[in-house]
Image 1 (cartoon, rainbow, N blue to C red):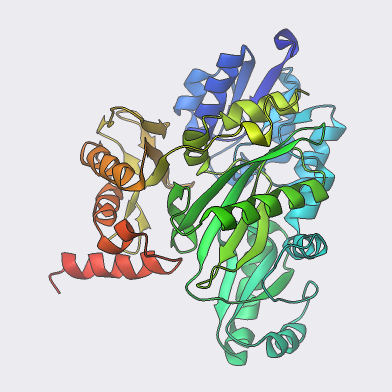
Image 2 (cartoon, helix red, strand yellow):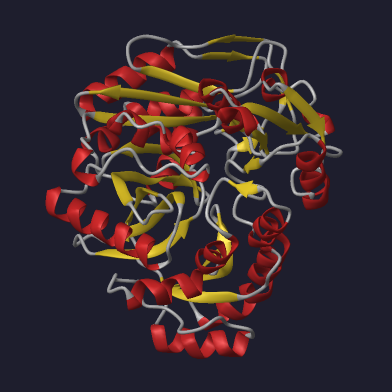
Length: 458
């Protein structure tokens, strides 16, 4: 890798932008931060060698402004673009423009992005590869009449999902024909607003499932490996809040099946770079493919902690033409890692976002305690973006030791001046069902109600 000729534009914000810039520094590669007017004092702007404003606060005018992002890359002499997660990270049109401009996108190609971006098409590829999928519609749905016919065939309850969806958006649980008629237009409008397409499809809704995903890495030389699974079942409003690796629910035999299926799908689409193949697992231990995320995930640190592999560094190395430095038989997964997403939100009021000025901070520390963040004292968390402030990650030899370590870390984590969900995480880490590993994707909704009731003295 000829370090002298590379400069990477960091086309994201927050903690992942900070992480990417630090990784560039380790590799001896210059970095350029882009920022909105609201983020002019953000940490990633201060850390990069160069920084360039790409527009006003609203994301559609800045971080989602393809013309401004491309112009920033060209004007600064950048040779590659790192997308992080969110914003343009999975936008195939953006990737295609990057390619046409002679820049390197640090992720899969636009053609591969198109395959995985279309969730209905990805299901077909999985089926053709022999990977189990949840029963669903056989094609993209254009009208409510088509949806009603498919709903009758599949049987209620069902999930109405955006074809180009992601991040928990554009998904509605439907229990009857009446609900489908009522919520079709609403879900379609959300899909169109969030993803630029109103196409929807249906899946059978399975209750009491685990959401488990497998981290993969693939280079241009058709080498593909996986780093085991992450359990991401703890979600509020379909947004992940706590993740752990490995999964308490997955045994050795199932782990082998999940890993093999993830690699098979990755190879089938000729994927390159870091990606995540997502599955749900029902109460009987049956697993089903749901989608592939063609980017780094927020929760990637738990996979790093159990594997010892720097995923962001490997993303950059792969994009610059380097082969993977290890094979599957070299991967050793050790211990247990847990990540808590620390958000600026009020868990006693339906997780309402709480932006504002952070007065003071005390970060936890200790052996195998990690904080990925972009905040600092007197930093103003803006109201325009995701409420994520930091990710608190711990590692220990066993799950119970990791839970105990997380409890201590949360006790010592102080963010003053604004509300955060630190207390919510602390209570969760003491919940007997969580400690036993007895939870599914509905758990947080029930637990959050319990916390609110106890706070009110009910």
